[in-house]
Length: 486
Image (cartoon, rainbow, N blue to C red):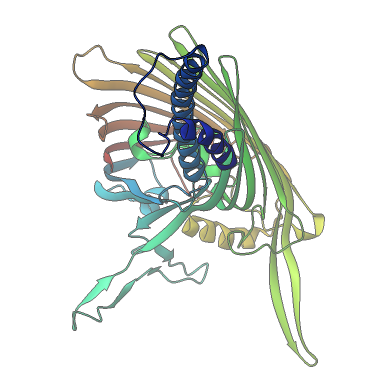
């Protein structure tokens, strides 16, 4: 472009020279111009007009060049770095009632209580226009006061609670109870096009509805559906993922592929076997008149391995021996329908677990292999006396939530009901579980939500003897929640 402008400037030099007055002796008295002189005057006027036209065009070309240079500089200059901090918090009140209880009430606690729920903070940073770092950190007061073990002369155990009291090194002489943190996710993503995002780190497994968006202000219920308690899919994984979005007419298609350490005793830190887990999700969304919908299917395959390390002194050696090993396949499906004032959410999870014959664990009580830690410990101690090994099994469950926005002006108040059915182990029918929840969800100006619900848990089949966990076929819970997004 600069060469073109220089050429145009050189082309104008003769015209400029013609327009300059000639130096010389004093001019003679004017005479009648000849035909030749009139012709020269005409050519001079044309040259001046051409000079003006070329100057105008030269100015336009110069402006275009400057605009192109500015656009090119902006395109190749990284955008300003952005950092955002946001999150959510919820405060809860709940009360349990367990009919004809043997042990469950003692572990859960039937006394009405306030509960510190979720305090989740998102760290969202874009160092470059195509890169994004996202971390979600949950702050907890746990494990203060958790039951570490029960006292039992038959099992040879003593009662103990977890203590987290320590000295305050700044305020000398004072002490405090420290809590804990949970890294929900921490990923680094590169995205140049909408159809391709490549990421690495600790990511939430893309399955279901709640696991993808678990912020308490966005959920209808006060807690996650019980279906997620049994973790047909791992809640999070450490590895690589690829995802993207494609639009086909009015249809939005989303896909995710993942490669990770899979499930394991230390999967978020390291993999203890050579097998890697594979995952995939495909979702579609669209609108038809006043109905909006989204449907998705999820898939996961991986190997779980737990090991023990044995040291020998003569000769000195460290041996790593597998203790538990199984392969698992998980499938999931979900559907969301919204047609004001109605909303419907449905999920289905299934998991198949096949053990290696030489690495089967001790059989726990049905339905307790994914339950709270002290229940696992108690069940393990009890199972050691039975000396039975766990069989291969299939777990499946489904959850349905229906909501209706009440026709009250200026108030976003929704009534909802949910139904959940879970079969934790297809080798038994006694552990089949039904949960029914009804409640209200009041959204105050978008950021603050108040919820109240009643839950009924029911075992439709006679529980196995001895009833070491729940001696009741019914469990009741009343819960309220105040949640805010910031």
